[in-house]
Image 1 (cartoon, rainbow, N blue to C red):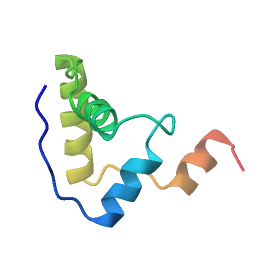
Image 2 (tube, rainbow, N blue to C red):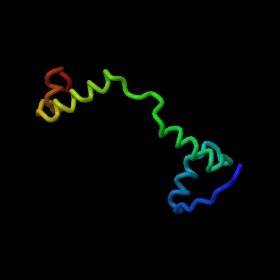
Image 3 (cartoon, rainbow, N blue to C red):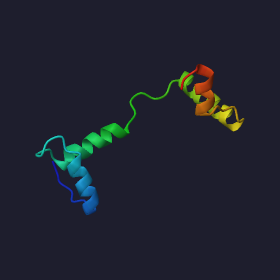
Image 4 (cartoon, rainbow, N blue to C red):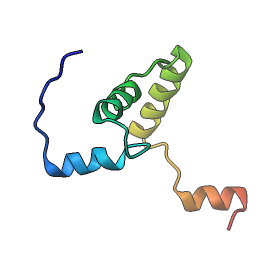
Length: 77
């Protein structure tokens, strides 16, 4: 395994430190975990994409309800 030196700000180093699961966890392990989280293994289904597109069209067309209107409709105080 080869090593590479990477410059990061003291603030980012502190943030990485705070993400350690235990004090002896390496920064490499923390970064690997973050990289794994950044990749979505389950892309959106066609149904989910259609639902999002419909919701965006509703927003563009102004078909929106305020929180107060929804509470009133469902009798929630």
